[in-house]
Length: 53
Image 1: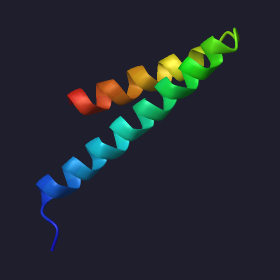
Image 2 (image 1 turned 180 degrees about the vertical axis):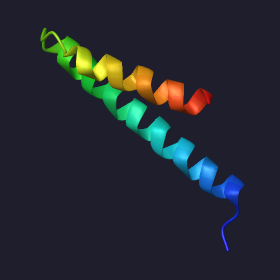
Image 3 (image 1 turned 45 degrees about the horizontal axis):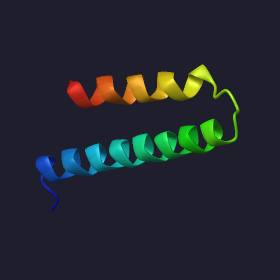
């Protein structure tokens, strides 16, 4: 049986993975001189707020 702490850690790992992927995508878009969408930044802020709760 998986305890609550383990489940919480799994959620945090998923959030950080998503943040890293978004950050990587932003870096690629900046290298291509493409202006990235505000949605990417909004998503990072949303995830950060969920982690801080």
